[in-house]
Image (cartoon, rainbow, N blue to C red):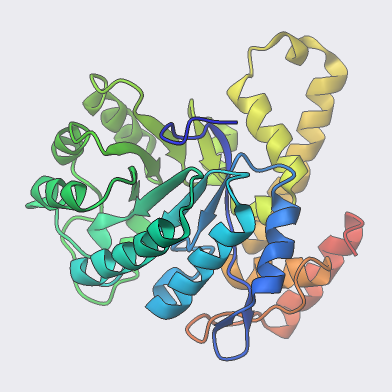
Length: 318
């Protein structure tokens, strides 16, 4: 049991989006994936901007996937749902549509919105925007900061991060409870300083490689947990509790180190083409029935497929 209003701590798995041809959600494959990742994940993230391909999927597909996830999960894990879209209006429409399903179904599990505002909204007026959002929803919000994501937009955007002064004001809005952070260490330190007066504000690492180098205090959004949920659970909790007495034992330290080497090897392979390569890995490992990506996501090529099969065979995933 968990507090439905308290953000989860630990391993957040950003699920890939199982698809049939034509960007049609595959509910059966989704249920299988959830049961697979759930053995290690502390929470599930649906429609992630990177791993879930949400920004190249239609609102209808995203809504259907989110609703199907809630029907499968039935409150067993906290569920984070990304609502970020190309515009503020589209973002709010998506949020309203999913929230309407939550209300109709009487869903009582733990649900949180995830939003990367700089993708569609400038820093100017952002606190006022979220003050209005807070009047339209009762579901807590987790913001996302990912400068690499903003760089993918075709139009010029002056600021690719939430400004520190703006984050300080945003943290004063009660419904905003945390941040998924990708970026420099310096900015991370500045962000932590900006929200120091907001009790319970949660920080998740949005970059699993950065988390392994310098863990945050609250958890990590790790795409690799789709494939290796147990391994990522062990790494996450060893990092979060790195001063725990069990780490004094050489065999435990050695085991975690070996696990870290394995997940790093997988990360090096899928980092440059996350969703496509990870879906291929999941298909080769027998978790997904296919490796279909969204029509807007380039699939893996023959060389990448061969490399995926080799690493999965190396670690006995086939």
